[in-house]
Every structure is written in structure tokens, then in C-alpha cells.
Image (cartoon, rainbow, N blue to C red; front, top):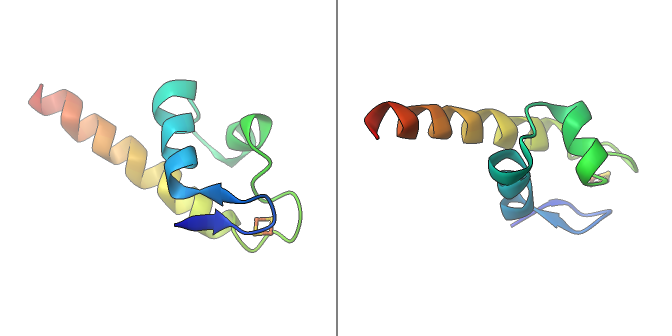
Length: 64
Ligand code: FES
């Protein structure tokens, strides 16, 4: 699924930036991907994906 139409960035790309790139917020995400630098419509969605990915990771760590 595309989150950012302007740059063609998918939810998968954002998730892997969080999981592998250590991204924890929008500012860090923008340093790695161009998400949100054009029209800004995707920012809320991208932020949400960052948050849920971090929560998922935390839960996974607790279980493992
Ligand atoms: S959809 Fe992401 S900047 Fe436009």
C-alpha cells in the first residue's frame, strides 16, 4: 500500500526504515525517505505506521 503518493513510498518501506534504520519519528523518517516533503498529506499516515511498528517491536521483544 502506498502511503506517500508523491514519492511512491509504501508502508513496507516505512516499516523497514523503523525496524532496520532505527527511525523513531517523522523527522528521522524524512532523513531516510522523502516522505511528506511534497504535499504533506501522508504525514499523519506515516506517523501512525511509525508508532504501530514501534509498538509491534516492543511487544515482540517482550514475548521473545
Ligand atoms: S503524499 Fe507524501 S508528500 Fe505527498
